[in-house]
Amino acid sequence: MCVPGPDRPSRTGAVTRWEGSTPMPQPRHETTALSALVARVAEGGLSAGEAVGGALERLDAAEPDIRAWVRVDRDGALGAARRLDTAPPGGPGGLLRGVPFGVKDIIDVRGLPTECGSPLRRGRVAASDAPLVARLRELGAIPLGKTVTTEFAYFAPGPTRNPHHLAHTPGGSSSGSAAAVAAGVVPLALGSQTAGSLTRPAAYCGVAGFVAPVGGPLDTTGFAGLSHSLDAVGLLTPTVADLRLAYLALTGADRRPGPPEPPARPRLAVWPGTELAEVADTMRAALKHTADRAVADGAALVDVDWAARTPRLAEAHATVMAYEAARALATEATQPERLSAPLNELLARGRATTAADYRHALSVAERARTETLALLGDVDAVLGPAAPGPAPEGLTATGSPVLSRPWQLLGLPALTVPGHRDGRGMPLGLQLIGHPDRLERLFSLGHALEEAIGATGPV
Image (cartoon, rainbow, N blue to C red; front, side):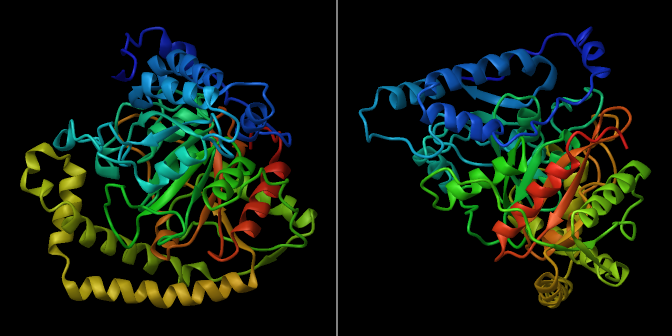
């Protein structure tokens, strides 16, 4: 039976219980949440049914407070687990056998509605899996259900709350996926990014996030698109090592990879982001701490004139996104009364954008991509804040995506590295931007930085 998420009891008492909580600790050992589950199932210490049953128990405990799930496919998930457990040797299942995962509700899962956080898509059942979901099934992973998205993956929030502090946003648009991983319900969730839809919630919720390069190798077919030039697949896991495991499995690995090789004397371009946003003192301190630690471990820092680069990219990104969204959602725009004010404003801007302005924005992106790939030929990654600060208080907005806009315009891979937190225990995520042809180097560097951050106290 496929059912909506658990009932929403009164918040009285629940908020009080969570508001003073500190972040759930991230594992700091070689066997992380996803890889530990993969190993236990592979070695016979845990059945697929037990893995899924445990996830459902954790979901039932967390969901009244977190509200991360739109729909939970209990019977479907348990049935898939039983089939794996009763299959003969050599039967179905692969590297991610028995891993329960969440799916952002703009991504098709056969037999489940893809509602995009909007009443305009209510009850639209997907006839087939998105290729990314189908690939995960081939690997033995089991979709637990659909996670909350903001309306059409834009700004209007759903009901999801930040697991670290219920009065704060989890970010968006991949809000439910990030919160489900942060709450420990699932070790893997699918999201997407068009502006800051994956990087920001990963940073706010204190989990690792990976934004795949635009255009491949992870396929966005079966995603409800917002901007075809900008839309990208996103993965969320507890740690960077888990991201690497998931990505390698999705792209063809047939066995568990060994630990990432530590990067030898990496070169980093440190980007403060202050030319685009007012960056919180705590985020600046987290960035400085990480850069200093990297230098102490042998990294070299490279100076870049960011003010001459990123503002024009953020502006061009906004132009491309509005123009393409207005065309992708042209049918929905005929019912403005059923859309949020922010989405109506985006679509109006897109309709008012001329084709000449759109083409100019694309040409800005093309020139800047060439320049930035040249930079990434000289440095291993750009290191900067993943968001201007910790998750803002309040649930009526999802925070600013501006620090992701330049990199998403260029279609580059982005890695959110968790570990830092402020004095209230709220996560402070950093991001690494890398070369699309050097993803193993990006994962290795992200893993090394995550390990270096370690059990750092509040900044």
